[in-house]
Length: 152
Image 1 (cartoon, rainbow, N blue to C red):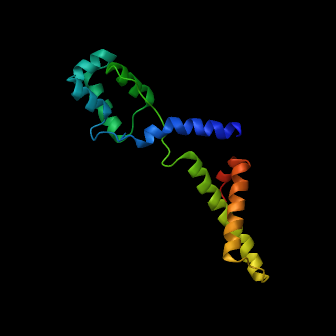
Image 2: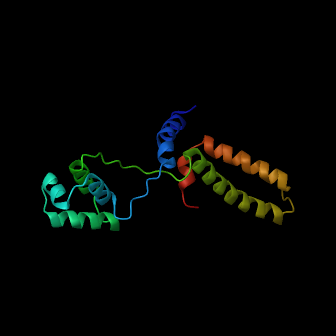
Image 3: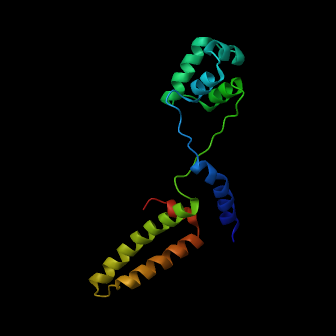
């Protein structure tokens, strides 16, 4: 197994539990949800992180609207005695994403070739077309997968 494939499998093992978890932000945001759960006022959190109470209200609104920085979230997390976790969680397993992208690229390549072959009365039978698609997909996955992401 090549190093990139091993790295992808290792990353996938780390991501799998996150994909299964319900990580949707609470309606009023994580800061407000945790602050309320801990029984901490905005004034108390402000004092813990060295800002004014109105700044906490603004921070909570910014989190809900998506206009907050990671540095600010990290500061609030520290004030709440929490660890900020930042991750991109793919919607599907990484190998599945690559295979799907390779299928799309193979379909595009085959469509061009098959059209030309049809014009020359050399069209492939459906079973042969499916087999060629799978051969192309496997070749693409064994090759440089960076090419899969080129816009075609």
